[in-house]
Length: 219
Picture 1 (cartoon, rainbow, N blue to C red):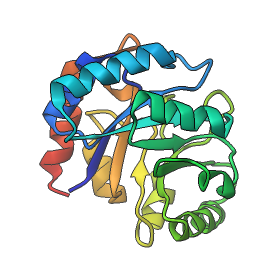
Picture 2 (picture 1 turned 90 degrees about the vertical axis):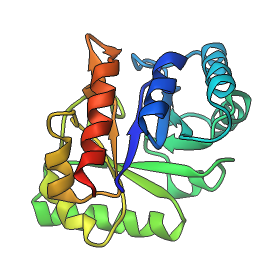
Picture 3 (picture 1 turned 45 degrees about the horizontal axis):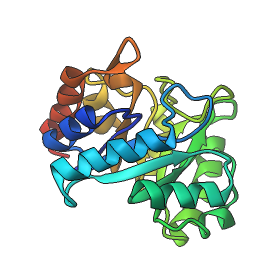
């Protein structure tokens, strides 16, 4: 089955709802300047409330970081009680080996080169990450912020990569287009944030519709 990550959560209510509906990963942002960024004490409270209500089983809890000191990343992962780190910036491969939790590495896909050139560049990075045992998310390249913009990249690039690489597909996914994305790309998983929001806030109806649509594909 296609894995599902609901990202940019800011309260226990929506985390618990996504878990109940069948999400595999729940994402919490710790990148300063990003709208969904959580303060450390808020994150600790949310995760404690979530764990108390849901227990230790269920979706993996993921902390998102971008170009931040490894000491901050590790202390946040441990003090909040997160299962994985998602690394979203320009950190080198060797940075990942210092993270105290398993990692998801965001690889940003551009559209300035030809399709085959971009496939080649991204494929090289995916090979290196696979060798390091790192899970990958493909998202659109942006100079504004490292994800959560709700803008897709060229799925033809991801489609070509999916034959040899497993990855989570991110960027502009919604309940309305995720079935098409899965049918076109055949990703290992899908990752959504703004696509399950209304007026910048998580929307339970959209979370439920997104998860149900993914599961209905049977992929």
